[in-house]
Image (cartoon, rainbow, N blue to C red; front, side, top):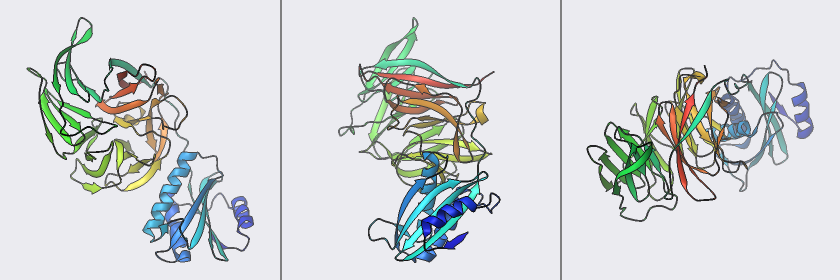
Length: 399
């Protein structure tokens, strides 16, 4: 639907009121965004800068507005336009609205004295499922200490704890974990300020990934480990569904965007903090927590297909045999104004559907890594004592 108008605000209100609920709808948000971007490119001219203002007059939340923004700006880029507030040729306002059967994107475009209004619609998704009865997250404290905990893993020999200064093997004796052996970590240069690390266990062997350093070792018959400087990719697992190889930025706290899937696909995308996979209608999706605060949804070919704006920077995938058989554990965003928490979600129609109630922590969650097909290892820092505590978070299915 296209309307060229002189009094664009009045016509905009009229369009929202009179649009029929049975109007043609794009199948997905991306289709609606591309429809508008094509009209915008014809209006502004190829290669021109445009500015965009966003607003939400619907009952949908900030996550949906964030998804619309990502889809629209990606579509503008594909159409050959540049989003910039510096000397824009056209000024755009994108409004997220709705009627009983559709979600609506209404674009108001101004270029000099010329005004245009375009509208695109897509079918409303079915309401997201609420937390499933009986499905929950079980939290079990496994270790706490003064030094930062980067990761914890469980070989047959006991428990490995990765800290900035060492890897320690503990064995379970008399109802508690007792230290058995430790191997120091001696980096060639100081660690980054916000250090991250990952343990991966295969039988009695293990790998320790740190920024700019890769280590390999064994927990049996005694703890041994060798480390080398290098740019070896980290192995990011997501339950038993899929793996992703990702290169870590040696002087930062995030992955630099160079990734490879288990199928051999190699690609360079934007930098990200963490990754998880999820299944949606027998399709594999990758979810990456990006540096801008959004979680980008990618298909199996690592092409963006949606976004989530309501999660924190730590996510992990699990595959408990409930809630659709695929779950993503996610922390709260840092600006949520609430205690940090971890909650399990499913992905339905490229949107989040909560599966469990959130499990809250007294302080920030500093690490979240997959631990098994149905659990993740979470580390939280107590704001009062400064101590770090590691927990196994397990998806528990209802009866």
